[in-house]
Length: 55
Image 1 (spheres, helix red, strand yellow):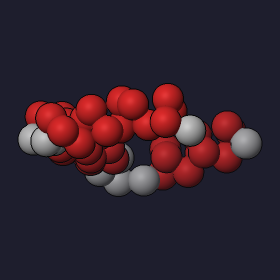
Image 2 (cartoon, helix red, strand yellow):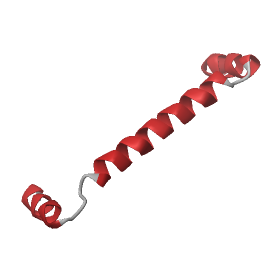
Image 3 (cartoon, rainbow, N blue to C red):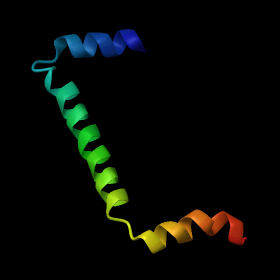
Image 4 (cartoon, one colour):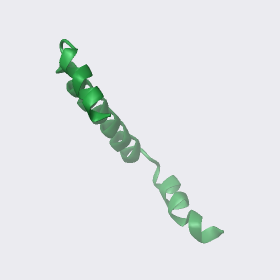
């Protein structure tokens, strides 16, 4: 399977764009999650934190 992927990527032109694109997607997702956690309401965090104890 790896040899198929290796042969395929060797024939591609501008193959350096894919790692850059995947890194950009990862960084944007990570920053989005950090922003979401930072803007969470503190009361909602307390509800989520105590959720397993309420059942």
